[in-house]
Length: 415
Image 1 (cartoon, rainbow, N blue to C red):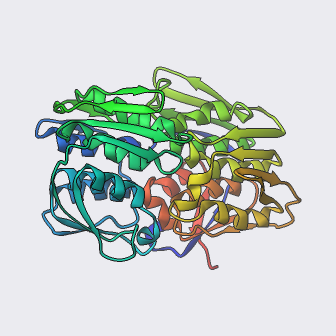
Image 2: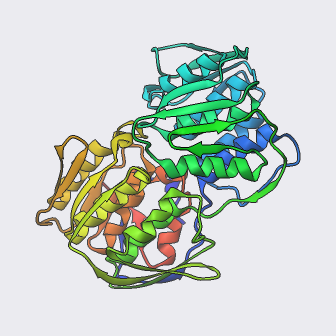
């Protein structure tokens, strides 16, 4: 049996292009990581079920139990940002660090906000970036903040989750266009599930001082992971894929994939068990604002390039500060599909189509799990090599095994 964790690259082919299977997706790490922080703030008695097997979630579980002074968030953005707020407001003395790439990802907006509230945070390296020394919290009577909302929503979620613990609660005014709004709504919904009242009116979120209550919660399967199966159904000759456990009324912003894929060749049927995907005709031109679901952008760019669908997209500003610069990574990798991705005006990107002349594909992943999973479905068209396949452990550790279940041949590549 292949150990995917050890491979430098793997080769994917699918001899028939017929997909018929039921796939148990990993649980949502977005829900799980928020629920873990809230459960830790709620005290004993909170019960979480179906926690994600994703490395980010397993890591956060371990770190929340750790008594070590130095905490390594590795490459996990949510872990870094959520623990910054958690340690700061609960008054724990910690040094918080991560991988080399994590220490290049900005955290100044969150740190500035926490300092305004009374947190003691000191940068140990470059100003505005991890690593940081967190120590002590002294409420200074300030409970009103203005925070830019056109960057990572994880900053906002980190502040919201600790808001009820602040002596006077928290009033958060979001400045500018709100990016990834469903992730903010997810945070507030989970807070309400654990007994905290909050109001989101206009651009202002108000969280009074109050106590979380212990409760139980079952994490939904991951709609982000579902997006790769939508892509496979769109590219397959024949397909019927069941994804148990997905909810029509979901907290997850990436459930938008169901509506997006109406245009790109996949019909979504909600059943008592979850979701059933099947093929339908696709459109040849598509435009979309990814502000509420930026993690879907890589899937859609790769799919449109492979299907010959022209694409115009906005709302992808936050992709620049993810695991890699995802815009740049996409621009490089789709060149092998004869395509280009150009910023035609400020914030507006257009996919220009070309001819696919290669008999096979090879894609780099840039230490980014979504690059690997977004481009893997293209093996339904041509033999495909994915470099550094172990990156999928971040959110979907069983991805390559699940591809084998539906008939993909997965072998070690000599590249």
